[in-house]
Length: 219
Image (cartoon, rainbow, N blue to C red; front, side, top):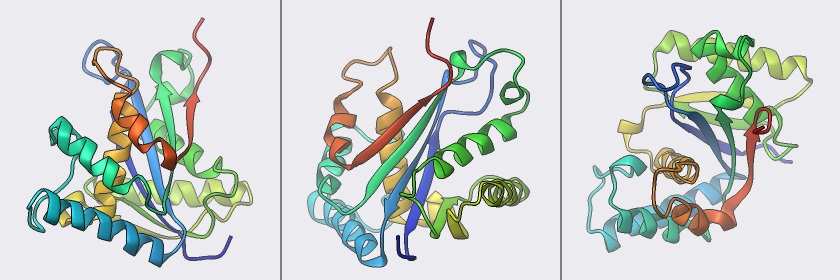
C-alpha cells in the first residue's frame, strides 16, 4: 500500500480492572483509516456540511458521541457512511482476561497493548501511516506509548506508522471527532443496559472492516 495513509484513533472506556468498583467493563479502541489526503478532505467536507448546513452550528461546535442527542448522532453517522474511510476496532472485554496475567497488572500496559494489537493485526490495512492520537493524556505517557509501539512494531518486522501526531479533541479537528463518534457507536453496541444499542453501529456498518473481540471466549 502506498504511503500517505492517515489514521485517527480513539478509545471508549478505561484501562482499569476494578470491575464493579468504578472501572468500565470494557475498553474499546478504534482506528479511522483514510488512504490519502484526498479521502481525508472529502470526509472532513461531509462533516463540515452536516455541522453547518444541517445543524446550523459553527466551527466551535464539536461532535462527541457521549454528549450528543440521538438524532444528531444518527445524522452524523448517516452523513459520513458513504465517505472513503474504513474502521477497524478492538474490544477488550475485561472479564474475559484471565486473573494473574500481566494485562491486569497495570493500566498503562493494558492500554498500550490494546493499541498495539489494533495496529499490528490490521493485516496490512495500516501501513506507513501518519498516526493521530488524542493528545489530552499526559505528555510523558504519550511518549512512552509511542516508544512502546515503535519497539513492538519493529520487533514484528512491521512498518505500521512513520509519524505520530498528538491532537487534542478540543482543537476542533473533525477527523479526530469522527474517530470519537465511531468508537462511541461501537462501544455502545456492547452495552447490555441500553435499548437500541446496535442502532448506531448498523448505520456505520458499511465502513467497518473488522471488530476484534479480544480474550478468551465466555464459558
